[in-house]
Image (cartoon, rainbow, N blue to C red; front, side):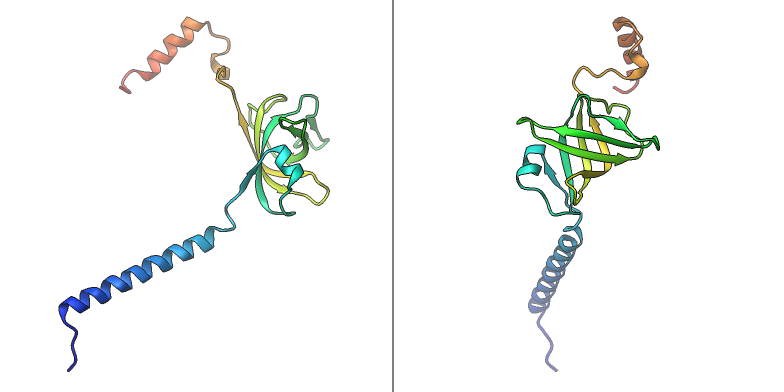
Length: 156
């Protein structure tokens, strides 16, 4: 009978565990390769556009005066601008976030269409440091501060 010594058995188990771990990592990387979406600024998208249909993110500012709502009430068209006067037309069908307005920052997730229009599946609106929730807009500053103190009591 040709049995392995305990020392060799442990070595075989360690090697098998490492092979299994590397295999699991490679499988995970292979599964996630299509889930990665690259981030583009408008000037980058115009200079070196992604492949048609590739999932990417487009970030910039909503150009003032460009926001239009279609007759169906849910399709929005607007332009995202960057630093160098770069402009990318965007089409989005769905409910836009409350903070989505002209002149605000936006990140659109979607794909570049064959006609050069970015077709967004999702919009993420960005706000500046002066953002005030709608519920607190009508309050005086001391009233808002009092409400904030009351809601944080017990969280410390």
